[in-house]
Image (cartoon, rainbow, N blue to C red; front, side, top):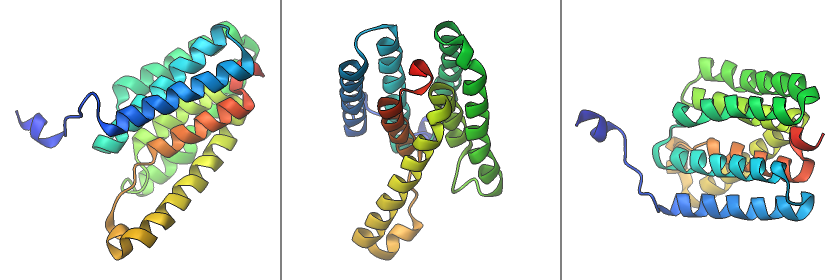
Length: 186
C-alpha cells in the first residue's frame, strides 16, 4: 500500500505513451524505408519500442526502470554479438564511455543526472557504437533548447522544475540510429 502512494501509477494509454509509441512506429517505418526489411529492422523496431516505453515511464514517474533498461542492454550486446561480432568491442567501448559520461555527474549531483540516465546511455552506446556521440549531442542540444523554451514560457517557476532527460536521450538515439545506422550497419 505504501509503495502505491510513493510511485505514481501510469495509465497504459497515457498521452506520453501514445506519443512515444507513435514516434517509435514512425522511426521504425523510416528505418525500413532506408535499410529495407531484414532482421536488423526487427531489432531497430524493438529498440525504438524499448526507448519509447522508457521515455514514457521517465516522463510519468521521473524514473528509468532497471527492469527494462538493464535486460535491454544485455540483449543488445547479445544481438550485436550475433549479427556483427566484429563490432562487439566498439559497442562495449561506446556503451562504457557513454555510461561514464553520465555516471560521474550522477555521483556529483543526483538531482541533475540520475543513475537511470547513465544506464540508458549504456544501452544506447551498445546499440549505436561509434554513433553514440551523435546521439548524445542531439540529446544535449534538444534538452537545452527545451529548457530555454520552458523558462521563456513558464518564467521563474521553471527554474525549480525537473526535466526528465531520458526522452531526450532516446530521441538522440533514434535520430543517430536512423541517420547513421549504429552497430547494425557499420
